[in-house]
Amino acid sequence: KESDLQVGLVQRLLDASSSDTIVTRSYSGKPARMLRTPWVEEWEGDGHPAALPTPLQGLLVRDAMTSAVEHGIEPVLGTPVGQVVGELTQRESCAAIINRLVEQYIEAEDRMIALSQSSD
Image: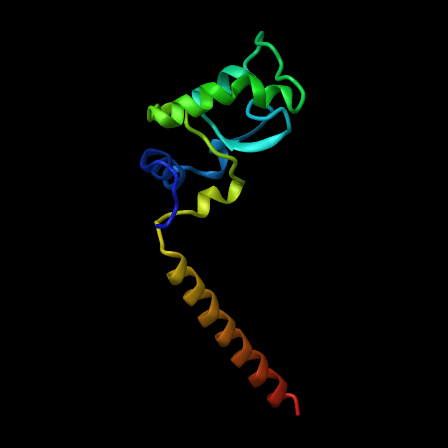
C-alpha cells in the first residue's frame, strides 16, 4: 500500500500472470524482465531497431518514460518485475507482510523444536 507506483500500474501488476512479462533491453539497454506494454512490444517487434547499449538506451528513452509517468499514460507504464508477478493478488501494507513473515517464522521454529524433541 505504501508504493509510489501509479494506481493503474499497480492494478496491472495485480492482474498480471507470469506470462505477462518479457526480457527486454528497451528500458535501459540491459536485459531486464519487465511487464509487457505496447512500448516494450514495439521495441521487441520484428523489423524494429535494436535497443542501444547501456547507458545510451536509458538516455534515449528517459524523457519519454518520464513524460509517460508525469502525464499518467498508463498503457505504456511498465516496471521491471519478475515472473513472480503472477503471485501478486492484493495490495498489502509493509506492516502486514512483515507480521505474516514473523508469524510464519515462529510457526516454522515451533515445528522444528517439536521435531527435534520427538527424535530424543
